[in-house]
Length: 117
Image (cartoon, rainbow, N blue to C red):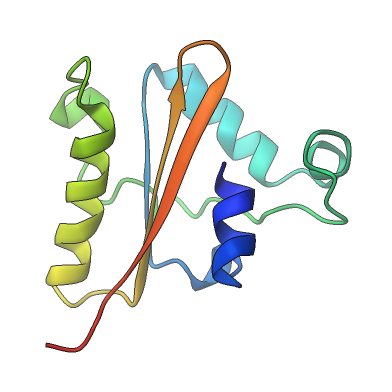
C-alpha cells in the first residue's frame, strides 16, 4: 500500500518527514524495515525496479508507536492518521505517511500534505 501511495503522490520515501507505521507487533516493524530497504523484495513483490528506501529510525513513529501509544482494535488506522496529522500541524514536515497492516494480508497507506494556513 505504501508503494502505491508514494507512486500516486509522485513522491519517494525520502520526501516523507514522519512515518507512522502500525506496530501490530514488534517483529512486523522489523519485517517492514527489511522489506522497504530491499531491492529484491521491491522487484519480486512490488514490481518496482528499486527499493522503497530505508526507514530512518528518527522519522519512524517519532512520538512512539502502538507499543507506546496503544493499538486500539477497530480504530488503529484513525490513530495513525491523526498522529501523522499532528506532526503536520506542528509544522515539522511537509509530508507524513500513515501505513498499516490489516488482517488477511491486506494493507493501507495514506500520505498527508501540510497546507498553508
